[in-house]
Image 1 (cartoon, helix red, strand yellow):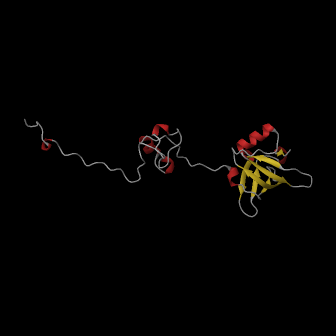
Image 2 (tube, rainbow, N blue to C red):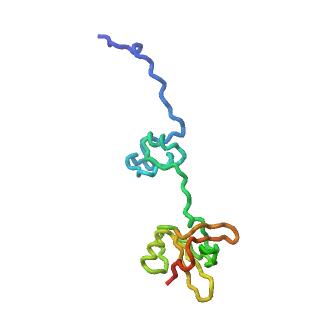
Image 3 (cartoon, helix red, strand yellow):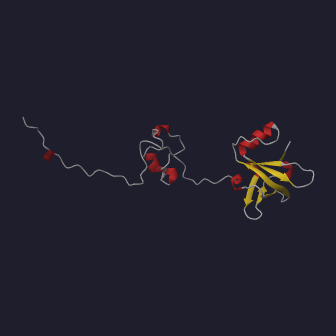
Length: 166
């Protein structure tokens, strides 16, 4: 018995689609984890966060991300040795330590204040004057910083609002 259909009975298949070389993988993320395990709001390497349009990454099964540029925290632009002025323009002192948010380095202040400083990041400032102690400025008290010689950190708080070392 002959087959009812021969290859000539079928139209030729369309050419196989080959994605562009920069198309992100559609089944796994870095390390081979399934896409369903990708945290929401965080795209795997090679997706929207790396310059791919979010719609294309989402269509490929990747978690959505916000394509808005991320601006660095003001504390990230502060370096040891920079001069510090308060919101009134008065000199406070010189930065002796910079701790980014979330570090486990506890400042020498009261317990409740220390946790707040650790969560926002902080500057330890060597206050000017003979009988002064170090003071701490939280990351959210930094208004601006200007690089150069000397670099200057401007606070959005007065000297009296800073936390004194114990």
